[in-house]
Every structure is written in structure tokens, then in C-alpha cells.
Length: 127
Image (tube, rainbow, N blue to C red; front, side):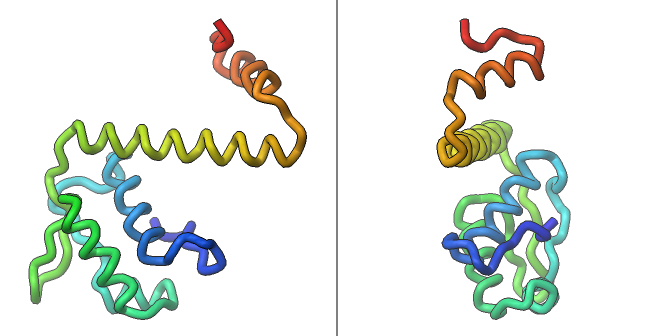
């Protein structure tokens, strides 16, 4: 689940960790009651400071995605559907922004992207 964490990214590591958990919850990869890796285990696996993982878990707890049970671990909360939908929409927006930025660097126009999307989906998006 955490294979996409990139220490060279300008996005802080704790934000990347928290974002990955949010995506997993929104996509149904994680559901209520699932335990997240312990702080020590995840810090070791990602080769980051344990404080980084603690910050990610605290942010997730503040947003209602997880519950931290001292001495037991961190567990996924029952996240309301609207929160999962909002997270999916936010992730879709990020993907589209990145696509447009990458396309602009390559000199690909929005019209060309829409054309490819229309072909790939079978739906004329340009209407």
C-alpha cells in the first residue's frame, strides 16, 4: 500500500503516507476495523523517522479516517460515504492536474487529451 511513497517528492512524507491511507479507504482497499501497520514497523519499512508516521496517523485521526488506540494500534474508522466520495473526487482532481501539467510539458493540448479520452472511453467528452 505504501509503495508509492517518494522521499524525493516535494510533498512531505507524512502527507504522502496519510494520502495513501485516505486513497485506500476511499477505494475500499481498507475498511472499518482494519489495523494499520504499527508506527515502528511502517517507519522501518519506509526507512523514515517514526515521528513522520506518528504525524501521518495523527492527521488521519483528526480527519476521522483512523482511531488511535494507545497500546493497541491504529485502526481504520467507519468513514461516512460522503467523506469517501470527497476523497475520491479530490484524488481525481489531482490526477487530472498532473495529467495536464505533464501534457503541457510535452506540448499536448487539452483538445488532444479529450480526443484520446473519447476514444478510450467510447464517450465523446467534448460535447
